[in-house]
Image (cartoon, rainbow, N blue to C red; front, side, top):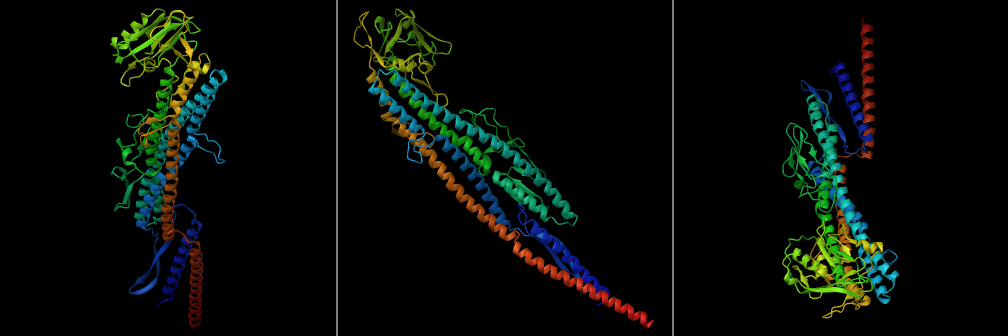
Length: 587
């Protein structure tokens, strides 16, 4: 072997070692870089005419276990879903409050507010004529219905947050899709130029993992080196180019806002709605929370609110106030042409402010086929006028503002539920509600211009003008309201809760417990998914990540190799010098 060949071999070893040192140095520097994998400089012997002529670095590569990566991608989606669900349900649980505090005192939940109302009614029953105790009942009831409204508002706010978070996640996904498409191009160009693609592939895998935490996907690497990404149903997200997702947030989110009705935008790709295809990852969880989990919580609140309103109003409409009001306005929406399905008798009376009779009439409701016919009959009672106002509500007023109108429902049974006359039209409702979002105490009770209905219109077979016909039955009326809250009420199966019978406090406690259970389950699921994802990430890191101890040891070995190659070059140079000196001497 000539000295020139030996020198070339030494130089090739020195050059290869320099590159390996550079790669090892990069490994050490990037040990904490997200998505970075350990790189190696691949080398092979150079052979000419069957004789070794040195070493050649063929490329820089990294080794990533594809099965481990696929498992990590799937666990990222599961963890993204579990994390999002856990965070939202934790917020929801805080919104609902607790039945007891950490020190064992009364909590802040709806069940506790109902218990407070029960206590206020019990106190009023002891001193039924106390104006302060009556005001306390109204205030406590207002606090309860306000809490129902606030809880409902909180649920809708969470749904709005989910809607906004979907939009943010879609933007993040689009950025990653664009990055992957750009990296696909860069990788092909680098490969064509004979350059290393390892770092570019790391960046691409990192972007892939980011997408997987946002939504469930399928993917594969095409023969040309492109990473292609699809939805689980095969809608292309990245093939020869990136296909961005489109999403528009809702302008306002209320209980009636749903995806099915078009209130929420669909997530689309090239005009195709893929919302139903996203079942995992952060976006999948947000869709489930927005369209299923949180609406089910709303439906539970609505059941509580509507049943509470119905029961309290039934009790209130069985009474009248003293002095009777000069006008009653119903809450039910009706029109004059509406068919009236009713039986039994109702008594309407005009009295003075002390409850003494001015006039009255008993109406046989089976005589009237329409609401308009009933209105005409009420107009025929001396001292009363009736109409359907612009809002579609029945209004009954006295023609003399100094008098009042009182109603005894007697044997009346109106509508499919056979409600009493006043109850059916909502003429003496305690609260108004179509659901938890709008339940409220009657405004005149809050302002103090009216008092609780704690009196009764005499139901004797006949009444005498000038006689006292409206008298206080406060204790009985208060007990009726109290019994409404505490005795068994039938609640429908709603929002994941089975049909049940119990007090309002029992049902409210079941709602709070249901939320707490879901939150606990979400926390446990998150912990399990986090452990699984961490295990896969750790395995992948062990297989393809940087081990600082190994790289440091490798660097020491490479330094020794570099020193050996340098010394070899020095030896060969000395041999060249000796050879030149010898030639010059013989010349």
